[in-house]
Image 1: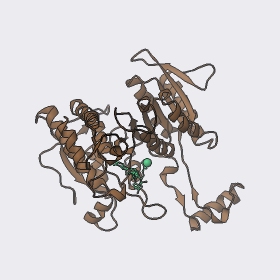
Image 2: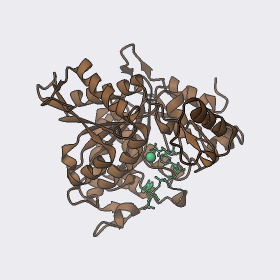
Image 3: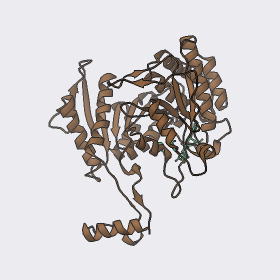
Image 4: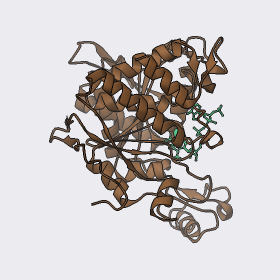
Length: 417
Ligand SMILES: NC(=O)C1=CN([C@@H]2O[C@H](COP(=O)(O)OP(=O)(O)OC[C@H]3O[C@@H](n4cnc5c(N)ncnc54)[C@H](OP(=O)(O)O)[C@@H]3O)[C@@H](O)[C@H]2O)C=CC1
Ligand SMILES: O=C(O)CCC(=O)C(=O)O
Ligand SMILES: [Mg+2]
């Protein structure tokens, strides 16, 4: 029984089998978090577009029952001033298996810790899956944006992003500094009296479960390579460990063998007979390579913070963060969300591109096995961009475009179905 969540009377729960496959009823209940900032603009548009695609694809035989759940600013209004992430929200995301969320604000410096990260950590949604693809006609800063076709597997539960840190001057920072200097003999902290401190945990288990998903994705989707992106030359035992454990897993579980003495490896895709190359790239070099030679990269496996930077950089290459979708996944639970944030200056103005959240919903439909509705969203997105009726982000760079609002773009997509 929930305190504030109203369960729709006409829907059923999605359930998970022992092999992690889903049982999806024709009328599933899907929890959604509206989101802060522009969440109020994009979430209703996403719901309208998804409902239209499902209605068109299945002629009324299938229908989503949306169930609002709360996090962020709206949660504090519903549950009380300090309740940013209610227990029942976490329970609903877990219990209803598949959900979708708008962006949530995280203040810089002080204030609450990221609710987005808290959702991922508390539900152990260890994969952040962010596909990056080009839609013909989208304005891009690069000459050949169609060459960028990558899928990012970002580790979602570890790394410096976990937020284990102590503020400069705090009791905790002093205690940890004392331990490091006096007991561990650390001499390399340049200004020990005035440093804040953070911890970067990276484990074998965390690496292996992420890399296993990336390699399996390459097998299932006939991809030519998986690139491990890291900064292991500098952070040897965290990022370097990630690289070594990733290669070891490819060898151990996928039968990968060294190419010319290594470290690159290859293995034969049992489904297609084609080779899959497993390679690695140091993160700074990788960021210039994806601009200069994007067609050499396909599936990317990387740590949390690298994945955060790479997601936005690659999104820009195919036209920006207005059409950058994503998913947070555990073996059983899936929560879909856009790559972008709350873009506060545009909040409530019916202005921004709802494309990222709509494409996140497209990933959700595909995850549910509702392929016809998902395909309809992709084809409609392509036709809508082709019609040049687009939101400000594309209109400002596109010749001959008609600028439409956030909801206006949703209506264009529905017309194009
Ligand atoms: N998963 C999540 O919920 C995330 C939450 N955040 C949070 O969001 C807040 C704001 O972060 P910020 O760094 O400004 O990053 P944002 O991603 O919110 O915005 C940065 C810029 O990206 C562009 N943009 C964002 N959303 C859209 C959209 N829907 N359509 C078109 N363009 C868009 C805008 O560019 P322009 O100015 O050129 O128009 C905007 O100014 C922070 O509190 C941050 O922590 C950030 C990322 C993810
Ligand atoms: O949690 C946040 O506020 C930022 C998250 C983020 O940038 C991301 O997940 O890509
Ligand atoms: Mg980010």
